Amino acid sequence: MDYHNHQIAEIYDAANSLESDGEFYLSLAGPRPHSVLDLGCGTGTLCCAFAEHGHHVTGVDPAAAMLAVAKRKRHADKVEWVEAPAQDFRSPRRFDLIIMTGHAFQVLLTDSDALAVLETMRRHLNQQGRVVFESRNPTLDWANEWSERQHSIHLPSGEEFLERLEIAESGAEFISFRTSYRSPSMTLSTSSTLRFPARQHVVDLIARSGLIVRDIFGDWNGGPFDTTRSREMIFVAEIAHE
Image (cartoon, rainbow, N blue to C red; front, side, top):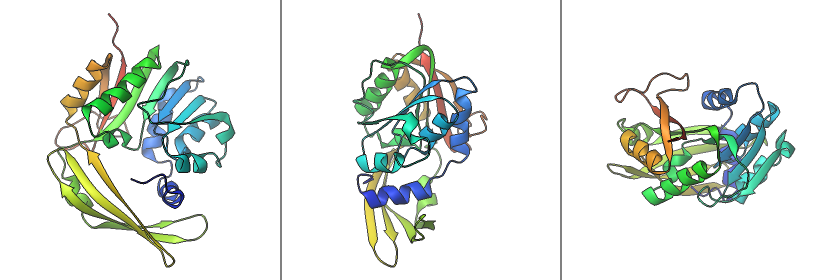
């Protein structure tokens, strides 16, 4: 998706408030100040929420337009913002909690990219730290659910956009789609492809990176993953010790 477009970044921000997934991630840090790395932080809503709770936060995203929106938010001055792909991020710091939210893991379309991100996580994780990210359960029929999906998005300026999603191609592991945003004054559109890797495949990639899975949740309440019913696969991993 073209999040480098500043207008699309503004629409994305208006459409993605802090909901149950954000509350789940916030709960992982607990009351004690943590160092948190958010890879693919988007417009920074979750980063700023972590900072508001007293955590030390680094937000990483490849799109300058997304970070420009993030830097205007309350508590943004407490966050370190880095413009970089998750695969390429490097820092001398180590973190207690490393997250990738908003199903950003599904934007990684190859094993090599997924491994590069997981290795970035492993490289920057404290010995007792945790890595947490989610991917949609591939056994559900997402293409059918998303077919011709549309809803309204209201910007803080008062402008309203109608978002419409059209499936372009759907296969065993990938879904490609086109998203359009229409208002009385303009139409914007962007194309995307997401990967829907199987649970075991993600577990294997995590192991190859030097991490080990400790939990897989199926919902934002921390319920167990069920292959046939769960919408989410929420992976919790840590460093594999000898």
